[in-house]
Length: 118
Length: 385
Image 1 (spheres, rainbow over the protein chains, first blue to last red):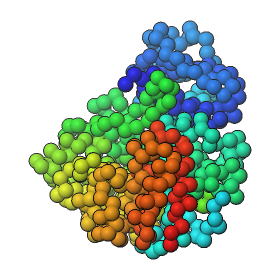
Image 2 (cartoon, chains in turn blue, purple; image 1 turned 120 degrees about the vertical axis):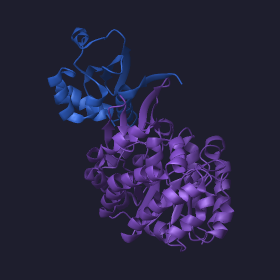
Image 3 (spheres, rainbow over the protein chains, first blue to last red; image 1 turned 30 degrees about the vertical axis):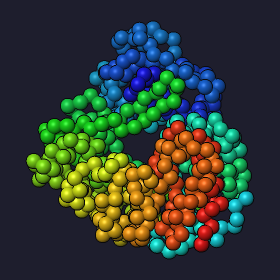
């Protein structure tokens, strides 16, 4: 089967899709925003654009390492291995200390992305 | 418009599960995956903003695949003004455990040792499902046993189940049957069917040790948490069958699975609840065992795989739930055909009670009008007593 997304990007997509299909995306996130998610052990990175009740997700093949994220125009990003994302805030904190997790604009990342991991 | 009901949905369902005659035949739905949600929300029956305002106020769950918000849409208009008036009496929700990370794999695993994945197809519709066992070697199973503290069930998940159940019953007169994964699925989702067969033959004590471990650490604590919330109907999913029979030798089912399933039933009955098992496939071989351990209802029962008339005659103690073929009739036939078909089923299987019809599995790619036709027909033709 040809899949557009798998793994954590697909989980985030699923959460956003569920909000969109039930008309809740616009209510929950009325603004326009662009975020980047890079699962370091499950590339490529993806960008997520949310705009007035719709969202788009795209693969970013040019992100190869954590520092590449600083060159992308976006409102927030997160880079982490899969297990750190599933481990919750404590694992993310540990990952930041270990240099395995990198986040920018944590408030947006938590509000939009992490709560969509079903 | 629907007639004034003589019984609440809970009275109706419990009456049937007790082997008595209700005011009319009740109906049941397991839920629906994203494909069905997409079809429903792009049909004339979609949830409107007004519907969602009420559903939000009532804190009805939108979670897929249990789709309680869509189940509520089938309510009569005096319950939900935009309701379809094709009442569904009972639906489902379950909770699993948490996620675990183990050294031998990069994948994050379910607490039974299985893998799952989310996939978004080219059409943009997502899918989330179990994708295979991860505990494929004996040393992996032993490593899994070391995860004991990470496998324990989360009490908050069971409190949430209870809130969902009470909301649906109090506001929408819909019974939410609730449960956990059954002992066979917990075992084979982690170790795989081939290992189950191999260990049953060559190392039965090792297989028993694994099944006992999952019972002690996951299943019994989960059942205690579940029954603390006092559900009226417990329904657990544990697929034993495939199209032509059991997925395992019946001797192995009786040796390894039946004793644990009997414990599930006992937990439900001791707390005053009814117990229903969901199992796909042809499971006629173990119907006598279901009677012996006191199971109140069996759900799914695809008619091509199961001799439903024989079950009805031979096992009157067991309520037949589901039975409406989700992958053929509901997918390919017309609403008119579906109406006629369920009318016949109700006459054949429901005349003496013991019947709660509905789709045999989670809805996927069936047209929304077929599902509406099914539940309208159950409502229209269910008044046979």
